[in-house]
Length: 149
Figure (tube, helix red, strand yellow):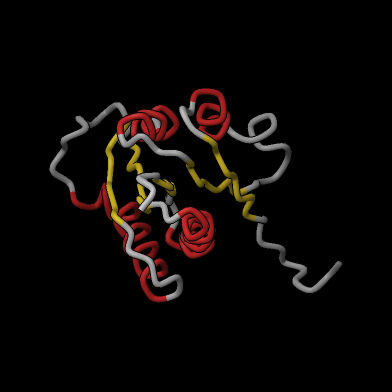
């Protein structure tokens, strides 16, 4: 093993499949380890260590989905980490630094309009501050006119 690490940020269980597959593909070529990370963003009204399982549920589901995809589809083992933070961007950068990630795979779900002027505050923060390469998967908005080109 080369000692390198591919970190994949997952937030939404519905998009964890694509991101986990992409991370597996990146890791496969280098023999890198895989780490799936999900940030549960906690509003300022609650302490970060609040005892409320519901706060972690979406992040936990996304991690479970990423681990399942990595294992069953990619045949890879993936470590998982759930982090609570006020904002996802700084938390992802901190985790990438702490784990010495070589690559961070993350998704961006485009919304109506340009989306917070270009990419969104989390993606912009990570792209500007990440200590490693960032691979961004643009997740297309679901179209009601399925099949139109």
